[in-house]
Length: 143
Image (tube, rainbow, N blue to C red):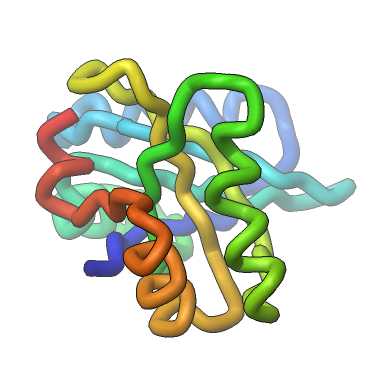
């Protein structure tokens, strides 16, 4: 049920992000979603891609530190309050959102949000009980 994101630690300097995306391009890895958080010297690039193993291998060969993290991909209605239909039941049941970011969705009118939560198993149960569609890894790869 959970999806997997890759995280790459990159220097906060001109051209570093372009270097990572060029490595992925050359490895024929397609980026489905991304989030970039920075500090003064370094950043964390979080990606949903169509080929995690290929991305990890290509990036490690070029000296990048790569991690894999379980995340939850959730379909969100593209309407006012759509995100709250996901967030409210999580909040009401004590599940904390550590971070989130959006994912392109060419297969539907709905958005897909990627969540890192403090309790993914509990979140899955809550969201399913509220009729919220969870998007698996294979569906993300196919976007």
